[in-house]
Image 1 (tube, helix red, strand yellow):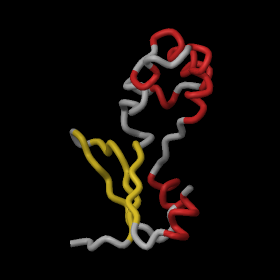
Image 2: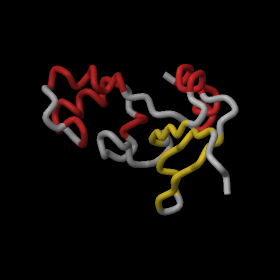
Image 3: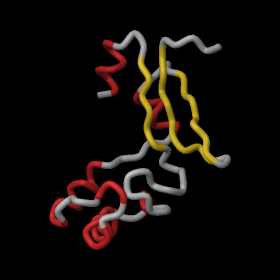
Length: 105
């Protein structure tokens, strides 16, 4: 997806949750992103936190495996030459934005 956006986009704005924000954006569970996938799937099946509500328990592992939070370094690597903006909340970088083609005033 990133390669195609970079190839065809004269301007783009791609926002993603920051891997190092303490509250994982999809589950709304603190530090969830640092747990092994099997533990994420187990918690998702048992408690259905955040976006897992309403997902059949047997799909929890598949859903957990589809989420991959990025760091600034990874975002720069997949969007070379872009600008990075850090959206902050209470001093923490909550999400990252890779953008290109917008006036930087």
